[in-house]
Image (tube, rainbow, N blue to C red; front, top):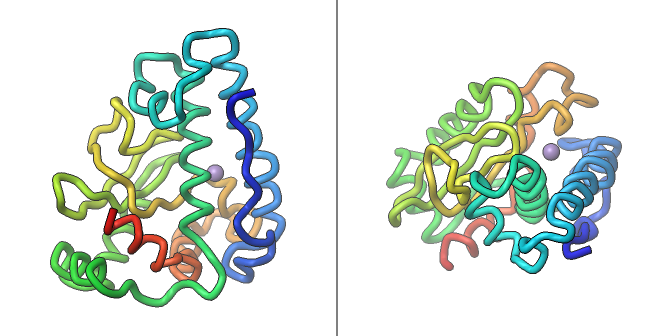
Length: 199
Ligand code: MN
């Protein structure tokens, strides 16, 4: 099996009270695991078995819906877990902070625009902060698509993403996606996002 589920980079209760333990257990152990398993099934015995996840994602629109959905699911969730952490939240610093202020006016204005992208994504999907042609931008994608995919309306390099599928917040927040998005900022690891920005 070419793809495997990595352990979370922190414990299941590390993001409490903002993202609850049971949600993390099910989200990582069941949902993310299923994307990995179904991606492996989708490529088993095909030419795609030896390709990297990034290569599969880049041509997700032409391979198959199963690779698009499950390859995207695997990439997006790995990226999401690595974007969060304990002792996180607060404000970005350094060059990223300057770039956010320059692109959006202020950090608060950026958060409002990002939250709005998450809130207005109908049904299931993701909101993203991306680097596009050297500039920061905000976009959202349906289902498990992401801005690296050939099928993305707005393409770019993701720096931060938030999962707005109901499975990401329903146990704690039920239908209150806005409350989940407000809590999300308390667990964003800006050091990590800043490293992505520099690369
Ligand atoms: Mn998810």
